[in-house]
Length: 403
Ligand SMILES: NC(=O)c1ccc[n+]([C@@H]2O[C@H](COP(=O)([O-])OP(=O)(O)OC[C@H]3O[C@@H](n4cnc5c(N)ncnc54)[C@H](OP(=O)(O)O)[C@@H]3O)[C@@H](O)[C@H]2O)c1
Image (cartoon, rainbow, N blue to C red):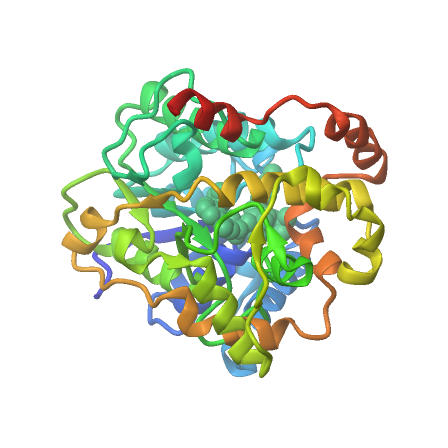
């Protein structure tokens, strides 16, 4: 699709997983010279270097990396919007793809200042300074909170008191609500990916995010979900393609979309295990059984051997969170996105073997760090007490309420 704008496209979060996939698609397009990049870095040279490294993670050839110019870099942090507010280039921006966020499962102090206040300040600035055609904000499907339907529609409105497994998803829904309430004239389109795992061409090479969960379940031979439960996963390259599709389509029927596998292309844990096993030339897990979190926690002395050198409380927190999430068996309808002409994604099981092969050589614990940035050793140790408590988490509470 040719893009309908003559102004600049400003992309945030391009040093991250999804933003990296977005710019690796954009750098091959004729509009690349009009793309601006908000990057954390002290100088445009440092910002440029960070963007080039991000492109290299997606195997972008060097002659295309050479197309990145320092003049495309706006050095800036969402937590300090006034520091770049006077940049003259902002007035020429017509389109924004806002991928920047703290997306991990830690809860660093900068979570709310980045994902809520900073994002609001950034959108306000652009709305005032630029003549915007579209502000495409990347949300997350899990912003729906809990309890939620088994198949969450794109029109689903979460109740105000929805519970959240992690502060991250709570910050994301708060941001969306405030963008709509405080900037009613912002040409906002929210794209909410489900879970992004790997890339259909490069597996886990660009990012190991979430893939370690499947490795962990295989290493343990047990997890807290049934092998028949399904999970909604999309690859980063598909997600980037869908974002650019939603950005470029002149008219959209809605202002909120899922980028997801949906009910039909979500995959069972049984099939994921088999695909990973096939990718590695190993047998699938044979004596799998769903167990309680406490059963897995009781095996903590095996963790160093199974997962590699690790901070046990962080591993326990990961098992607890993903155990809760996995057993929700949720998926996210994508009827709106498909009706806009976007083709469906490939099933995760089509490229999970590639993900497994590209993850070899990295321990499970090392991979997991990617999603637990912001959890320090001290905070991890503090979690120990919390994990010993018998308080049920939000998912368990929601399940019990629904039972
Ligand atoms: N990954 C998933 O499974 C998933 C699923 C659903 C939705 N999403 C959404 O997709 C978006 C991108 O996620 P991701 O997985 O690509 O995350 P990621 O790999 O952690 O990348 C986050 C990006 O945001 C930037 N960033 C963070 N704080 C910033 C700040 N204060 N100022 C400016 N930039 C900042 C980071 O810059 P630095 O490199 O400088 O840290 C990085 O470029 C997020 O909005 C997330 O909510 C992701």
